[in-house]
Image 1: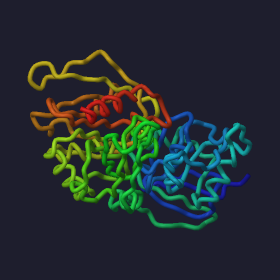
Image 2: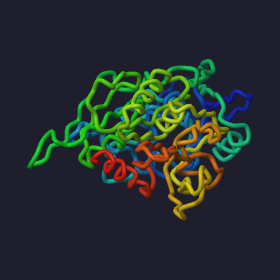
Image 3: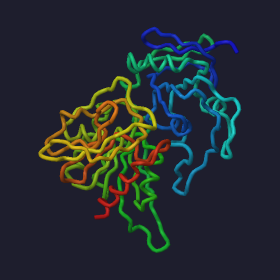
Image 4: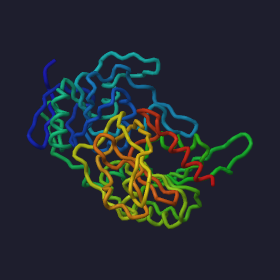
Length: 372
């Protein structure tokens, strides 16, 4: 099969390969994920909006793509949103044959159906090394000599493209009661379906609101700030609303981008990482305050699923906030919490999907705080 596609990075690097999926050019920020499985969940994660995703595992697509279906709350099963969110896909080898009892179609068929270009036969090891050395870069996919311009998604309001447009109410009902469960507001900055499912499965009613919606006129028992794409500095309305919510004093849980928005709401800074964390095996060390703001290990290390390119700067945290988790690989902040109030944030994904379930207890702790 002759090469008819190529990935071009902003530094001039060119990687030639074979196009599959939708046959059209595209552009975005080129990032890599080292996960071995979970491509249906990863490709539909709204946090990847505007990005060209490189999957480093050498064979992708061998278990196909499941049939689109939803649970009783109309949340997608097997996917994290109702469509593919990435701008393009880069793999070493795509599997034309697939085998799985839930499989409905091939990866290539799914990409073509949803209008997403992809390139195979790429040396993803060399490409990943390039991105690690130089940092995440803008890139474009040219197919059949069709070209497009480089595009920087981080300069746009990406959350507006992936957030819900209207208020969405999900009520948990049981045989013995209805409507008596606590209610949490979820600020949807590009919320994964599994986050909402993790809340309703624990008996919480959910009001899902647009990322810039002023929700303080809603009666709620807790607040979740979701994951999402892009630079947290772009979401000034969201940061202001979170700041107002902090004054109310209800329990707050920030996840991924939500952790960064929580940090900025209390006056801390965020920054763009060199190449980010996008994998299913990031080790995080839980920390605890000892004397003053000194930090000591609790002895617990959790393995986490992550997808982010920005992080919280530890030095800017206020005196009444402390680091909750640190990355065991590079020491970056992976979680923050208030020293006395029920406000916490984690940079990783406690809902997993895909990835390990080491930190599902974070939702349990949040529910206990909400129920007090």
